[in-house]
Image (cartoon, rainbow, N blue to C red):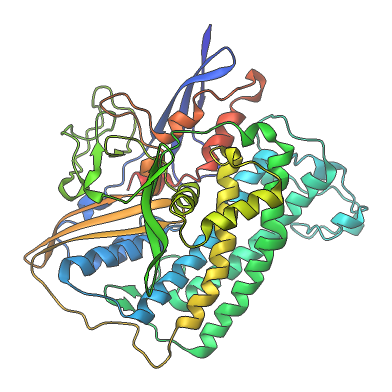
Length: 500
C-alpha cells in the first residue's frame, strides 16, 4: 500500500520549493521536485544594453550575486572580445571565494544543521557544563540568570531521530551562533573588493573597478585567517561528528552519481578547479555543446530540447503534464549533479589541484570510506573540505596581486556578438549565454546550479538529481518528511536562481 507525503514549502532554503513523494514499504518510491514561482529575468534582459546584464543578473539572488556577476561579465567579455587583466581575474576569484565561504558555512549551520540537532536540549540547560559555558544567549538573557534559553528561533521543526547527546546538541547550537559572526567576516571580505554585499558594485566587464590597495589586501587576509581557523577547528569537526552520529545519512541519498563542473577561479595557468564531468567513474573533458534544456515537465511553451544559446523562455502556466517552473538541463541527454561534491569528484578524478590527495587525507582523518561521498552527509563533507582548500588557496591569490598593475581593461564595443560565461557558484555550475545584435541584447539565457539539481523529469521520464537522490530513502511515517528534508537541504537549494 502506498501513501503520499508532500513538503511545501520546504523551509530553510532560498526560494519556493515543494517536494512530493510516493512512499511504499516505508521507502520513497518516487519523488517530484517543484519550483513554485516564475521570475523572468531572461526576458527582462532582452533589448537592453549589454552592460546592464551584470547589474540585473546579480538581482537574481542575494546569496549568489557574485557568481552571477562573474558569469555575466565573462559572457559579455566573450561577446565583445574583452579580457580582464591579471589583477582583475585574481580580485574576482578572491571576491567569489569569500562568497563561497559564507555560503558553505550558511548551508551547514543555519540551513541544515538543525535537522540533526535536538534543540529542546536548551530547555534544561542552565550553563553548568564548563564545555558549553561559551554558549551565547539571544536577547538579553544571561546564563547566570537560570532562566530558560529561548528556543523560538529554532522552531517549528519536524519530529525525528535526534540523538540524545548533550555535547553535540548544545555544542552545535553554540557553533550556530558563532557561525553568524564568521559569516559577517566573509561578507566584509566580499565588500572589501566588491564594494558592497549583496549585489557588488565593482565587478564589470573588463575586470574589477577597485585597484589593489595593500592595506585592503591585509584587512582581507586578517579576516580570511579567522574564517580559516573556524573551518579547521569547528566546521570540519562538526561535519565529521554529524556523519558518525547519523551513519544512515552517510549512506542514503546517492542520486545519479554523475557529476559536472564548469571549472572556476582563474589563475595564471588556467582554472584552479578543473572543468569536466565524471560519468561511470570516468573523467571526461567538458563539452558545453552537449548541454540542452528539456521543457517536457516545465511550465514553459514546449519546444525540442535546445542548447542555451538557442533557448527560449515563454511561460505556459497551465501546460499539460508540467509540474515545475524549473527547466531540465541535461548533458549528453543525462541528468547531472553539480555543486561541491561534483567539483570534488571531478577534480579528484582528474587528479587536479591536489584535491585527490586532500580528499584521501580528509577521509583518513575522519575514518570514513570513500563510498560515503555520494550521500547526504557526503555532500556536507565535500562542502566543508572545499571550504578548507579554498581558504588555503586564497592566501596565494592575495600574494599574487600587484598594486602597480591595472585591474580593469578599457571597455570596447562590438555591435554584434555571442558569448558564453561559465563559472562555478557555491552551489554548482552556473552558465550565462548572451547574443548581442545592434548593440543590444537579443537573447539571454541562464542555467543555474539548482536548475540542474532540482530539475523535473525530461522527455524520457528521467528524474532530476534530487528526485533520484530521494528515491529509495527509508522513511518513518511519524517523522512527517524529515528524511526528505535532510536530503533536499544537502543540495543547498537556491530556487530563486533556479526559476530565474
